Image 1: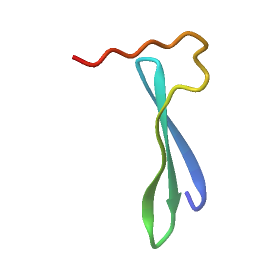
Image 2 (image 1 turned 45 degrees about the vertical axis):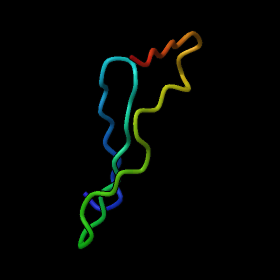
Image 3 (image 1 turned 120 degrees about the vertical axis):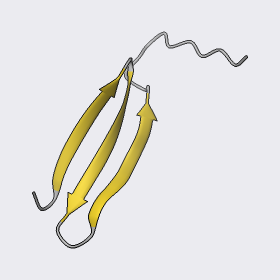
Image 4 (image 1 turned 135 degrees about the vertical axis):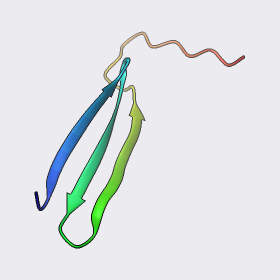
Length: 44
């Protein structure tokens, strides 16, 4: 799995993990929503 890329879908956002032998996993991008044209966030 050296240099592989895994995609995790969580509702509408996604995060990317990269794996390198000897180093393990690295979070590359967290909760990306750029692909959503009308994404609305609400803070309570």
